Image (cartoon, rainbow, N blue to C red):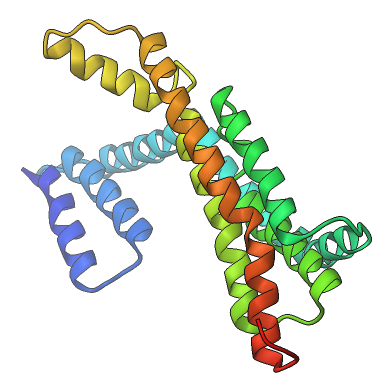
Length: 240
């Protein structure tokens, strides 16, 4: 029964609004010690239980260490941004005269959707690609062709950059037969008595992905016109 003290620690920790990670660690340690403690138990037994609990923590962390890689990647991206990654991205795309926000985001959208269709869903993402590279490059292209941006137009570009990543991934990944969503649908249909091959579902996803490519690609290409009209209206330099 003493092993159930960990539940009380979890409830108390969340009641006090303590850090969740510390609460879970404290609850696990309490459970490990409580399982070994009985009235009159030798102190050596408790010491051994504490050591075994720490070993369990270490073993679990070692077995799941790949989960911690994402935090290392985020720290690396943060250091790159602090060293001027976004400024370098803006400067690089500003030197290309043919670049514009719509064209740049359209290119990224096609690459993102094509990579997702091949199963490369990690080739992109908001934290590792959109925020540090794609959005600053699109803003740099806009500034090079349209002049200084207003805050509203800057947010519009960032929203389209995030949307290109989301839509490209969402409609592209279903073409890959080994993606989780395809396997989930295959398993659900099999439980309902319908035998469907993953390849069949992937083939049906191609028209949807092609339609998304045309519709959202058109929206991205029209982004340049929208930005120019807004900037002209905001500066009062002319009529839309």
